[in-house]
Image (cartoon, rainbow, N blue to C red; front, side, top):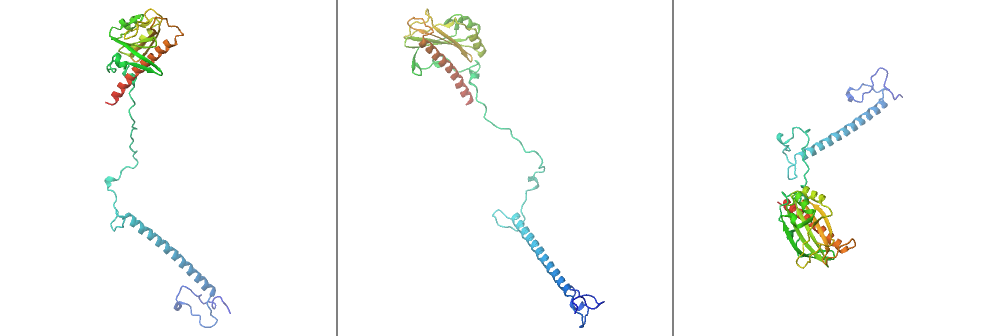
Length: 293
């Protein structure tokens, strides 16, 4: 018995044709080609699987499209809407997306005003000025040292309150005012003299021209005996802004000061430092006032 094709010359069995169109094999030795039938069955199964997979992919795409439509058409209350989603009008959409983004200059607070600007020129240094304004109160405390404030003086004739080589220095550089004040403690007294000029350059020049003989005249009174008129005393010279300031310190009993007279040196240094700080504070106060206007 043969499991191949039918008799010679007869067409084979076609698994894709209906039975009425198959060749008539009769009933003799004509038997179906079982190998061909098995192969045809496998082919049909394979096509069916492909169709199922393809159908699943199409269904997935359809679900994705439905979700996308639902997201686009969702309205403000988070529920889906049958209306199409609204896009910005043409005017609201930038026409040129390649244009550079606008840039803004960094902002910062203006720098603080410099106190030195206010005490370096008569044009800005306009606050009231007097010995009692520059040296307020009735005493000065520096650490554990307390100095009692004595007499004060003010004059526009600067040469009258100084001696030796200092009158010429102040006059040549345009001194407009001389302020003096005296402090004392335990038999030691010091007179501070502040010469006022129109500009910092004039004050600096006066300081540079002053020498060891450029001294102010001591200012006694209010319980302070005359001092440093004939005895040896210690003097200092300095400047800040448009102000040149001088100190003259010595013993009130007429004794000469020496390099070992520590109390004379400390008294002169304390008052020189205080004078510098007071002039500096004057500039700070005016700078602060101008910044707040």
